[in-house]
Image 1 (cartoon, helix red, strand yellow):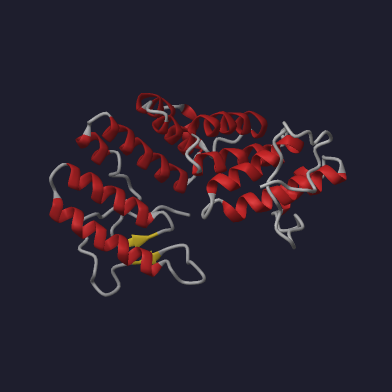
Image 2 (cartoon, rainbow, N blue to C red):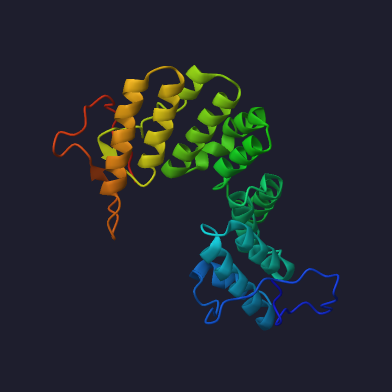
Length: 251
């Protein structure tokens, strides 16, 4: 798909062009922090980059490859901005381009000083067939800077890396963290419960795995409202069996 309004100065046939921007996209849809970064660009460039970032965000779930192309288009005019490199990394990861994702996340971290994407960096190493490197990232001092959701995400990556190495017991143990509370649901709980169920099944504990899958479905249902609360009690009607007594983490 070629964009007839492509801003690239040459637009020579051999030059890759950007994908089309949907009608009505203005760039104002972006959050305030990203818009502030874009104000450092020349006005026309900033508008161009903003529109492609909006398109990347809209498409990342349904068409990650096209979202990646939009993020790349944004990077051609705004590649020195952290928000742009982050968008390229996220869309590359979603599209399965793990080498590109890893490079972009490293660049984002260098520009921004943020370690928020350490879990995705580790999982990108897994995607490249390097579970040992994923575990090296998980052992780094920077991991302490992750918020609760990031810690949970990293635990799931570590579990996957252990499973990649054939270490099923270690994969199970990696998920036995305080946030694995069967009677409480946070945004990350359904995925954590399912990951734990898979790990249980891998070590032959199928009955327990089924119980955790049921709880994952219950958490999904509880969290499906229009306004997601910080925490949901899954045991109000006695549905939870209390196998895990960990205290819910503060948010």
